[in-house]
Amino acid sequence: MAMHYKDFLRIDHMPHMWCPGCGIGIIVKAMLRAIQTVEWPINDIAVISGIGCTSRAPGYLDMNTLHTTHGRALTFATGIKLMRPDKHVVVISGDGDAAAIGGNHLVHSCRRNIDITLIIVNNNIYGMTGGQCSPTTPLGAKAATSPWGNADPPFDISSLCKGAGATYVARGHVGSGVQLERLIRGGLNHKGFAVIEVLSNCHTQFGRRNKLSDPIELINNIVAKTVNVRQAAKMSREELAGKYPVGLLHQDEEREEYYEAYKKVIQLAEAALKR
Image 1 (cartoon, rainbow, N blue to C red):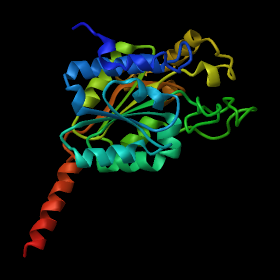
Image 2 (cartoon, rainbow, N blue to C red; image 1 turned 90 degrees about the vertical axis):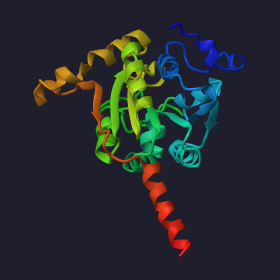
Image 3 (cartoon, rainbow, N blue to C red; image 1 turned 120 degrees about the vertical axis):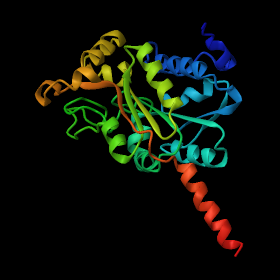
């Protein structure tokens, strides 16, 4: 199937604001290919974001979009999904927006298992707001707030989401757009809360402070740290040290989706009021 990206974009909003070589472009293209493959009508899709480089993506998409406040994308998305459960809701967010300022909402969205697809672009730093440490900045890495090296242990976002109750958890990276498209498509087709973590490059803020200012060099560095989930299952803890398993990490199709459970509560309340 031929892919015509212009059919999904607000061309009058171009050129975009991302730095040359930014991985967000690879991710948005993979997302659009996945949306085309599942054949959702454009008017049935809502794409929500908060604040940050990643969160500017909906502004370029020619569909129902909402650019919200910092860390609150999932709360707005939850309201939309509860009001219009027949529509498809996608959230695209950065690691700071989703796991720091929005961390509480991330955990509870996973717990509820509401039918929303969340794409988290993990570039290990606050890219737009000045290069501060994020919850995924590696130990020892330099940032605007850690010029002598980060002392805070980083989150494993995928493990966090799985532990909190997300029923679809996958991890991809910008070095393989084909795999990324497949993982996003799986999340779109999943009935429940789906999280796709994407390891991406921010050579402008993270890279230049950590001797990886060339985007290709930084992407290659990311790829070198990944290992296929099937291969990872055969490796020891020592062999996996410093590695990121990529692929489908977790899927549970048995748990009830949140709106379906909430609908039963509404029906019970309505029946009680009629007595």
